[in-house]
Image (cartoon, rainbow, N blue to C red):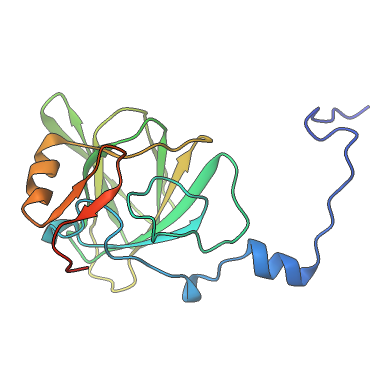
Length: 191
């Protein structure tokens, strides 16, 4: 006898039409909405990037970053990142795991071991799972204009970003900060 997961055992099988699937559960990459100021570090030139929230709320500081898939995700989020060569995300950490998968181009993930920066280069399709609580960042290593990185955040509550103190200070000089709830504050509207 097959084992049935007790969370779905005995429940009716949901029905969804093709139209409803397309409308509520699909985000087409070529139509996805991107945001260039979703996080505290994005006005710092080496951290300029586009954030595309594909599904789930994930970790965000700007309420304008809505998921492109209308149907909510439970327990994870998937975000795409577009960045020019040498650009990416500043040192930050999460209360959840974060997985990075280069989709187009080569990318580098960096993290702190004590005060020492460590790096690992990733080719398309490689996967790295950064442990909870480690300060990490990433950058594009390619000149491709279509460089694309997938970031997956796990857990039912992704929480907020905890920025490295050096990033907070540098971002303040660009007019960006976060309030006590971790929401983005744009002190001079350049976004």
